[in-house]
Image 1: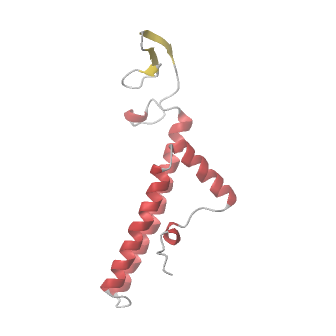
Image 2: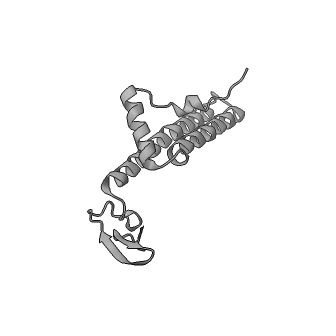
Image 3: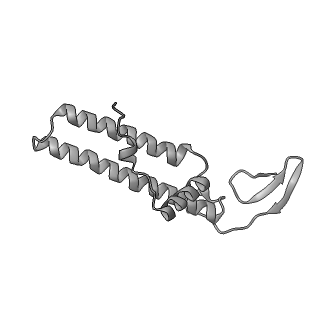
Length: 131
């Protein structure tokens, strides 16, 4: 069984015509995701929103670093270190959100982490290990 092109919810057999119709309301206004069931689309959106929120927090760190350099508190080399730290943090965040499984699984992990009060601090996780 497979979906027909266009994601209309129509299932086809490899050997013949349509064998059934799966009906659910359009999961999203995005035509590429219209075939997703609502729960899956909602979880994908939740992971996307989490990723965007965490990226905004990390970008704020870079903004603060630039402001500190402009104020003379840090030099260009310290800002460069901060930017590298930002890059490591965003890599870890991306690996978690996009590279660790399906959005449904990631959303479930996020729900569990929130319930446990243990959401990751991506900045801290990216801190270089210096021995």
